[in-house]
Length: 181
Image 1 (cartoon, rainbow, N blue to C red):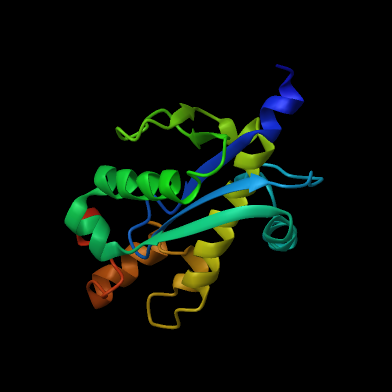
Image 2 (image 1 turned 90 degrees about the horizontal axis):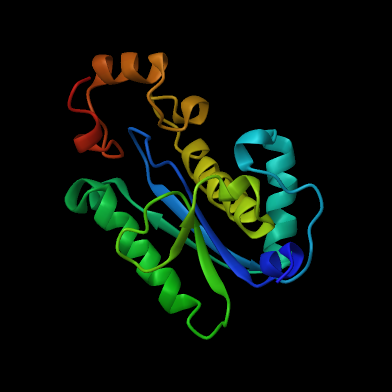
């Protein structure tokens, strides 16, 4: 099977926010129905380019986006949270004949194929890296409070850690991730 055909018959899966101290982890899956130019790993694109591509991906794919809130992450842990989302993707796309491909090296006992750096190789995984990142960033930017989530999106920056020390933990913080702050 040639590389182009292989890329067309896949449903990509990726996440954003795995290591954040606050807010949800967002996972996305999609099957591209049409080719999209200028796709790349979301980390390699400007915010403006990601926003533009997000709209194009939405219009040219069959997709599913899952938000796993901080309470679920604290309750289940990151591994079971992943497994729950991956199982939901399998169910959501069960009527497709396409192979599901998760960017990473662990399938969390879901039976889904994994590949490290898939978001640098496969257009469908590039697309979901953008869907997950933009969805999470939009969520975090809309939270107006003393923690300045719009600046750091809940990641463990110096500013964020200083604000946690000043104000304590908010209802959006992952308590299991903030034990040593």
